[in-house]
Image (cartoon, rainbow, N blue to C red):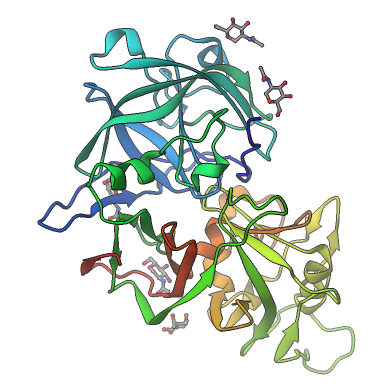
Length: 409
Ligand SMILES: *[C@@H]1O[C@H](CO)[C@@H](O)[C@H](O)[C@H]1NC(C)=O
Ligand SMILES: *[C@@H]1O[C@H](CO)[C@@H](O)[C@H](O)[C@H]1NC(C)=O
Ligand SMILES: *[C@@H]1O[C@H](CO)[C@@H](O)[C@H](O)[C@H]1NC(C)=O
Ligand SMILES: *[C@@H]1O[C@H](CO)[C@@H](O)[C@H](O)[C@H]1NC(C)=O
Ligand SMILES: *[C@@H]1O[C@H](CO)[C@@H](O)[C@H](O)[C@H]1NC(C)=O
């Protein structure tokens, strides 16, 4: 049975290149990029990679919420879709790319079907191949990945290769196989089945991923550990962790919106946003360009931010003056042994994506499990450690340009 892959809403068009840093260390580092000419949405990290003997770089969504690398096949039905970016660049010149195995050397076609479905409604069908994957200056031979021919996309969602790095049990294949990160460890390119993610502040510049390593300059304090939770059937298909608290802190907020009474607006300093029955669990999903939390939490937020909320329309526009670097959401994980502050100014959707007056926040009601996507990940440095089935988190330092990479563990 193929697993349903959980990733968020795919909607972005971005650009860039991968640079590599090679050294005696057994690590592979690649850049996560954002384009300045985003046509559809911000908050989507792009990783560049190449396949087989081809030099053409593919731009995939770096996705901790799915577990296969899947790439469209050039000239296939899916590449006829009007939302494709296989061979025809978008109006802004962005090309995500596609792969044509008949033109490449060193591709083995496996008799394994691919059927990947995503929470935003996208679904891709095809088959698996084995070939070399070049990423971050390293070339990883004999990597299994999916090539899709056809499928469906939600309206206005561009087609991207997906660079899924989730646990192998979340793969869309009938049988579990070593995906890129597991395979890198198997062949000795890295020492552990692990990688660390620094998305950085999307307003500033590129982030990075270090396979098999950790960059100690990119966070403050100590990395704190929390286990990856198993699903009810005992499987471990995705990066889900215990979500213990959610608070909103309004620091020095001054509203330009007149308050109902004549007095100055009153803000509670700290507001608990946890629903009565708790927060449960959350998925850390870099492919989700939003933050999914319980509707009850967003209702309280809306009151504090003096805006509207409804299940259908989501959170209304907010007075931009309230969204400064001293107003934040504080997320607690693992019985609050981990606390991460997310300043609200880091998640404001750029004005060109917003209709109306005010600031938009990419916060949406979640179904059962919260899904903390890219906007949240900017505030946290995360080591995804599959060998020990745990994540290590620390408050990210934003806009850091130096690096100090160590092997992990
Ligand atoms: C692929 O998966 C979808 C959703 O899980 C399912 O509806 C569909 O029948 C599957 N297709 C094939 C060919 O297995
Ligand atoms: C998907 O593509 C394959 C091969 O091109 C084709 O045989 C199949 O009919 C297609 N399925 C759909 C639903 O278009
Ligand atoms: C990072 O840099 C960007 C662009 O210069 C700036 O807008 C942003 O405020 C900076 N972030 C922090 C946390 O300093
Ligand atoms: C991000 O990466 C791209 C491609 O490597 C590069 O062109 C761009 O300058 C980088 N941005 C920053 C802020 O470093
Ligand atoms: C917060 O914003 C203020 C004013 O924009 C700035 O002076 C200050 O350095 C910022 N603080 C942080 C921690 O980014």
